[in-house]
Amino acid sequence: MRTDSLPVFNSFAQDVYAWAYRLLGRHHDALDVVQDVFLKWTRQCADRPPDHPRGWLRRVTLNDVLDKRRATHTTATLESTQELAAQSPRSTEKPETRRADSLDTPDLRHDIAAALERISEAQRGVLIAKVFDDLTFATIAEEMDVSISTVKTHYLRAVRTLRDRLQRRWGDAS
Image 1: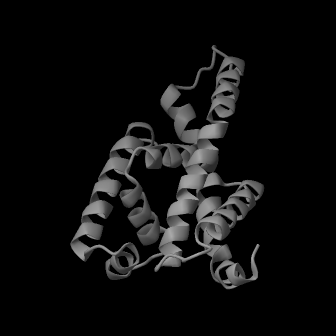
Image 2: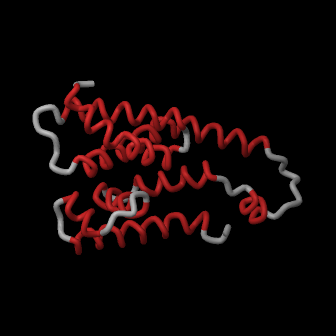
């Protein structure tokens, strides 16, 4: 890493790790994302870094997480299919009970990441900035160089879309 990239790395490495870890749930995968993101920073921003580094890093981190998720999706689907096949077909529990009892963070994290893939990059960036970083709409607007009303619109659309997508599986499990 170039020495002029070190201040950015020192300032934002924990944020990049946190964003990645919250969505991937695995330490080593999050560290891989941190490395990838800062390599991209070094390559793409060597001449002129973006005006809002944190916003740029958030966007690139989310895209990298989604790329990593897509790459492992086939493996996860195969493992889930094998787990379902191993379950006893004579279980006396109702499906709803099994589902509510089997709520676990990896499944929910996977479903959230899948839902995030289906919203626009702008909506994803706003949602993560608001929910994970607890930024104000004004701060997000400044980072994205858009109006506050645009940020609010992206946020509301993202929340609505995620709620609708997650409701199907998780809405009655709480």
